Length: 244
Image (cartoon, rainbow, N blue to C red; front, top):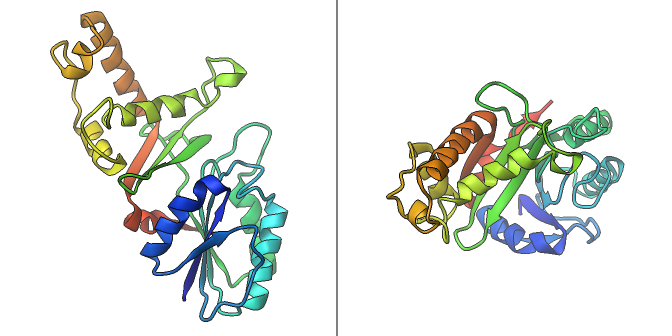
């Protein structure tokens, strides 16, 4: 076994176990103690994330956990993080969770490569402050969506641009659309030009031209001001980038 998938939070168990099949390995809960695993080279973590926690662990706790795995598995070479928000700074945090971890991890274990999803940047070149890693179990597909802070809304709406982007993508999936899974939905979204009053999406909602124009404008703004990528589960690991 060269890799082991670890989930944080019971709601991530199914996706972690599905991911483990693509690594030809098994998955376990982050609460299980580190152990000796023959030929273990990679730990893959998937759980909830924000600048303060990942898999319900602070950066110090996460580094300590990785160190415990390394102590028992000298061949451990890389750690992969799959989560929301870990690459981005929001709120009062000056460093993202991954920046915190990499600094501490490389100080103690310089031989371990640290990988995560890329820092999301909008088409206009703006670095995002929020990101979410969505999962669609029926199709075994994922979507990684990022956006800057909504400075026009109240404090409770800081990540609303990101959630509007998720809604847009899911407009192309059942029950609102016809494309099953995020991988097909993103292709449809990128090919989208404009909604008309004759389209099923509009007729089901009894939309007139004013509503259609408003939707088309929102689509254009969302695509310009957010970052969206999606794919199949087997390809998820190839989107990871090494953090130095």
